[in-house]
Image 1 (cartoon, rainbow, N blue to C red):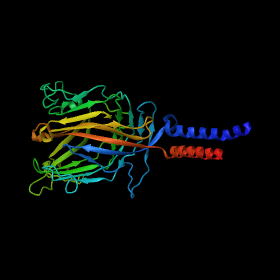
Image 2 (cartoon, rainbow, N blue to C red):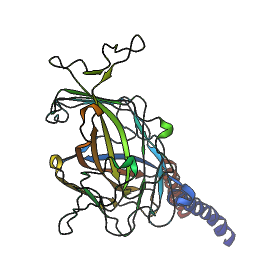
Image 3 (cartoon, one colour):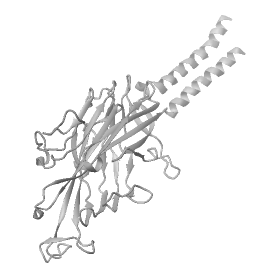
Image 4 (tube, helix red, strand yellow):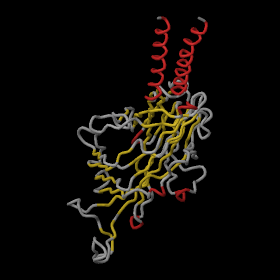
Length: 386
């Protein structure tokens, strides 16, 4: 009788071992090492409203369905994770301001964009060494900084920068404040801009101009995986070229020499047009689950924006949602041709916060094995009772 009880108990032990193994595979990141996820993005523009792209990525629509992306998940409390390259990718998106989209800015009756972009690998961790360790303010220190008022930078810098020969130091308004939280969770995920990206604007606010943004920098010159984002880093975005148009047609570009010339070189001497360069400088901080506030005091976008991230994932980081915010300040400068005699001018600025939510879900294989283990236990228990 004792032998029969032992023999009946052996399958039960095997089933317990199988179920325990399934549980470890589903829950232990040292074994699983990955988790399925989708992501959702939100932007805050030059006002207090936000805009969400309205879909999860990879997309889940019936016409464009893709399976979830796979993140590599680390170990320990608040586990780190990396998001794969190109899980966000769009090379066909077209945008134009107007009815049904965004209202066109005053003086910019036409604004269009042909987008081409994808993400580099994202890397996020607790105690991010490149993040703020305590409440931190990023600002452009100037000779007229007033400590009694919110930090701003509307005047000449205390120490001119050497970047771009200091040409874009003046009127660099705004600040970014970071409250990193106790875990200081965050990191970096940059985006590549494809060679087919281009933009167009018709500008009437300071005379008839048309803007053409030429293709971005070659991919080999764009920052990608492995270059961590640090507090207060300033980079230059795409360079735009604003051609002055002739009166009254506002179609032909104004020629300033030589004349006569031929627009399509080399069939004749090339034309030299009256053109302004538009340089966009972007001040950034790393993604964070803490709170970020962007403030832009310049006259055209006097805006304060605040957003807070969170992390409600399970202990192993394989289920739940983590939301991280990414603050930016954008300043645009126009450089007129030497013939004009005009100085460089700060033409536009904005505070731009954005957030990305990573929604993790259990691996189907691990979940199925776990369920199978428990079903086996239940079946053997019923057999033993009989």
